[in-house]
Length: 389
Image 1 (cartoon, rainbow, N blue to C red):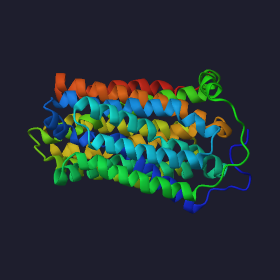
Image 2: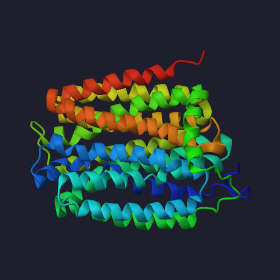
Image 3: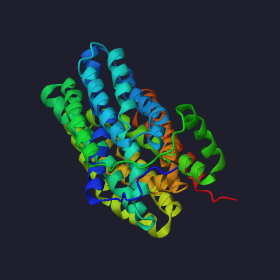
């Protein structure tokens, strides 16, 4: 099945558009993380209860990965990107106008389900890139993703402090629509494609996981990494705004700027994957993230250690993603949409679990409980580093 026109190639304009669109749209999943406090206050609930909005975003994105992304192996991806951009913008406007916490949770989850645009673009970039350049090309898009994840914390926290949390969702709706439609115009036309029906696309997913041990190991490695990341990232604003640190919501949001260091290092990780292979780079990312969690645990009463650990967490996560997603998609680039579905579904289901565990651990055992939970997830990730027999 040919998924891209033979004359298509990866241009600088397409790579830039894909990275920008990935960052602008992935931010929609994380908008609620730094503003859990204001959302809880608006609806008269506890911060722990308001954390359901974050978990709904993870679960919604997971549903979109399963139900929407496989269509990238069959439908016109330009139309997919345009349609998803419009639908996501409308759902974000619904989030902005939500009259209650359950309604906000519903709209935020649905918006996350349709904001899977980056996972439509990444397999396209992987397929159009030359094999020896695939790692670094993917890493540029992943740099955009991580910039969006980190930048969403700054954007959300600052805008909520200035205008209220509802404007966070409204502004994101406008940004998603503008960037998504522009990216659609830059994308190449898909060539002749096979036309498996929707049920056939979904039925094929377990088979790839069953037949491909490299895909299974990549999924396990990154599921543990992303669960640990979300355990920390969901609750970080709570510990930063609580005594003894006592930062404002806006100040806690600015901490997200530290994550941009990892986005700048993404091409380095991608080049290392091309040169040394994904397993070694995945192990390096795991070690960096484990060290970061230990620093965060030591920073319970030290803002300096907390900030250093916060900067290191996304470096470990980004390094791991560059390795693990490359390993998953190189199994068979011609069906990259479905391979990416399996990989990202495992990743975000684990992320949803990490968000829920983080909120529970913080409420029950404080920040040290959060850090201990993250280390358990990293231990599970290490099991995926075993060599195939």
